[in-house]
Image (cartoon, rainbow, N blue to C red; front, side):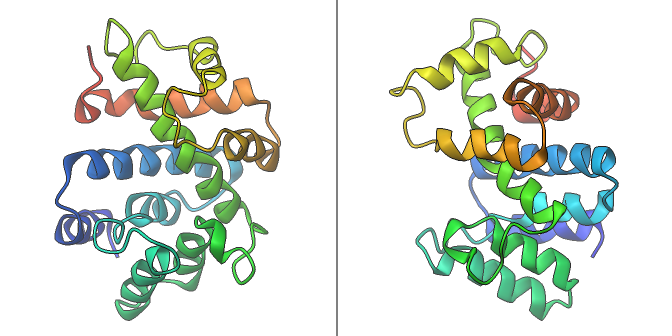
Amino acid sequence: MTRDEGWQLLYEWIAGDSLRKHALAVEAAMRFYAGKLGGDVEQWGLVGLLHDMDYERFPEPPAHAQKCAEELARRGLDEEIVGAVLAHANWMHDKFPLDRPIRKTIWAVDELTGFVIAVALVRPSKALSDLAAKSVKKKLKEKSFAAAVDREQIAKGAELLGVSLDEHIDNVIAAIRPIAKELGLAG
């Protein structure tokens, strides 16, 4: 599947703009880490783009991730992509453990990209251009801010990738800055 075909599929499954933006951000973070970790940039990008494509229709476990994986398998996508989509869901780790770089990375960037975007949106600039890890870490300490975000997963994600939390946050910010306009975060 090409990136354009993946984007068309995403549009078929997702109507909401915010979920589409999340998909773009996770795609960018996956592509960034693929380059850093020696992964297949196109493959990793597709995982990031499509990992939540079933969320509007099937938001609850265990259907979420499974329905996406079923559709991707039906379309003939590589098992590595399907397995990584399944591994992003905590309830699938018994069958699809975080034992490969692509699986570790999707799990590590999923929550963090959403959190970084939330932090950028509440800043006066509403931009990624002036966002730093320090500001994101400060907001991580505020339990009431983006309360649904699993802060433990963000910290464990950095550990899984073998980087400090500051470096992981900086990496995600750097990854999504080039698409700030598409995310509505160009200021």
